[in-house]
Image (tube, rainbow, N blue to C red; front, side):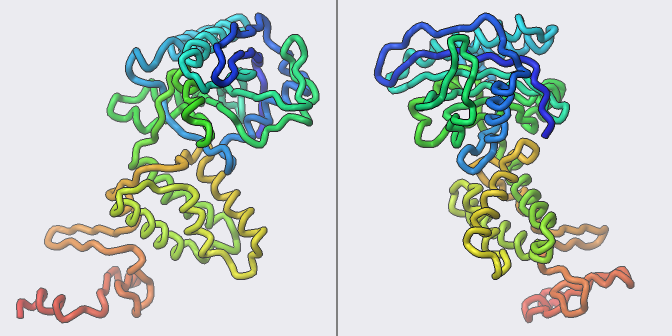
Length: 364
């Protein structure tokens, strides 16, 4: 991943849990984005996105004026302008004002150092906002410049939000009925911290939730794609897909959310016997990160869309005088398959007809 840093700044949101909020420390100049410590910090936060302990939620800015607040409009102004350092600082000040206002009303909320970064990743533009807690041994100097980054505890993001500007533009250009297909915001909020720190997401005008059909489609596609990438797992793709479809249907029937954790458990059953516990655990971690990456956008949890499962799991053929629908796993290319696709003779053969099927055909 090639990262080109444009602008970086760190402000300080001063709020202790159950204590009154204090005036924020706002810096008027950006940091040297080429400094090694700055690059290390920003890239460390970027690399945490979508990791097992930092599953991202995907969404867009909220639709109503009350929920959006001031930040989305400020972001659009920044995007349309020259995007110089002064404009970047202005944007971050708007964000800090919103954070200050939201945190003030939450008794258990706590603040921290707020990192803002405008950067290109593989030539795609992003805007990142992340809260960093200061631990023992972590140092920011009087200019809020990071030092001693090798001691930063970046195992978990406390709060973070990121805008994929390319997807944002696709969303803005789409017809209204298609906009829900483009999620350009991603944010991280640890489960143990959500009630106290939800102000971070609200302050930025974020609205979470990938539509059920899109999440279900991504889960079906990306699970199979991941197995196909692995030479020792490619032969298991068909069996894996059947189990994924069964799991998702079960979630739909029981009206419960599907999850990445459950999907990795489904995949685990198809691992070779020579995978030891360490290798299995590493596999689950890699798969979880693959599913939750920016390009896939499988949420940590999502509602299941039955019609989308059936689109992947079933074959439906309709001709002028007949139609047939069956599960894909019933289809085979040899004459012993339940439904034999005889490609050489351009025909489908249905084997093992039951008595009821025969009666329906002959009207006996």
